[in-house]
Amino acid sequence: MLSPLFTPIDPATGRLLAQAIADLEADRLVQAEQGLRRVLLAAPKSSEARHRLGQLLYRTGRYSQAEAELRRALAIAPTPETRLGLGLTLMAQGQYPEGWALYGARHEIAAKGLPRPQDFPHPEWRGEDLNGKHIVIFPEQGFGDQIQFARFTPQLQALGADVTLLCRPTLERLFAHSFPGARVLAAAGAVEFPDPDYWVMAGGLPAPLGTTLETLPAQPYLTTPSTWPTLPPGLKIGLATRGSPTNGNDRHRSLTPEQAAELTAVLPGQVIDLDPVVSGARDFADTAALIAQLDLVVTVDSSMAHLAGGMGKPCWVMLSVLGVDWRWLDRATDSPWYPSVRLYRQGADHAWGPVIAAIGADLARGKIGGGR
Image (tube, rainbow, N blue to C red):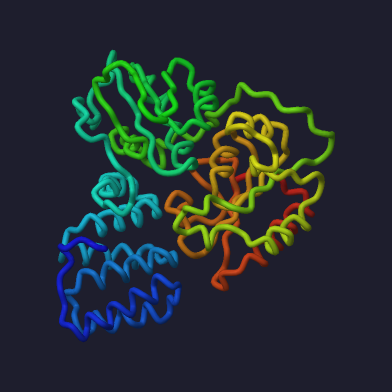
């Protein structure tokens, strides 16, 4: 359900819009785009139709067109959905300062399930001087998001802050070892920590830090206290073919068992499944200890990409053409967030076959490494 601030339209056009939205949600994207453009011919002031068209253009990687439509929608009705959509679109283009400011709208949308602390008697940090101050970082979103944004912890410490970093339990050991001096606590049930001077959501750190593509801290920042049984000598490749099924884009980003088997067949050396159910890893610290022994990680867009990237391990990430996450930007093969990562993107055919073939060809040429 979208915000009531979206402008109403007449019943006939409303039915056309409803069908276009149904097509969009069912991935009938050609029909959805045609329907939305028909709605806008009849009702050019329909902020919802413009928002949905912007959403479709974003999902299909047409970011500059998406930006234009979302700005038009925002001018008609300043809904949190459109502000967030525009923020993500700008971030996907590397336009971080304006994008971060709009990204805060994610907490205004109940359906996103991204709550902020309620009735917390301390101010949110918005860039105030942190020297000698205690700040608590609240976790949000998935494992990959928490790993990605944890990189800013040392930056807060360098500003003189006493940092409490809350995280999901399976990240606690990894973060505690990676960020010495920070108070790392598992956010499971009631958590006790000293009263802070400020609080901030993990995804809210880049904005007050003034993060741009040029100032993004991209050096490896994750280390592990765990040890892992020594693996046999020779080429060793870690593999992750599925992300969390709760992710809204998982049907596009994860591989089917048949596609996973096809990928495995082109990987030389010893292939190691990074799924903790298979590997026996107790938490991310254990998985990091396993990855430390590998020559390469090949993964879909999942927490394994962030873990390997945060360790500085060569990592090849397979990206769907539909709904690719903003953090991978509209770039060819590299990531400013993780210099050790190389990106393999689907083409217009939305097929994994050519991606798998490209990975196999690069491995056959001995091109193990990250970046371009």
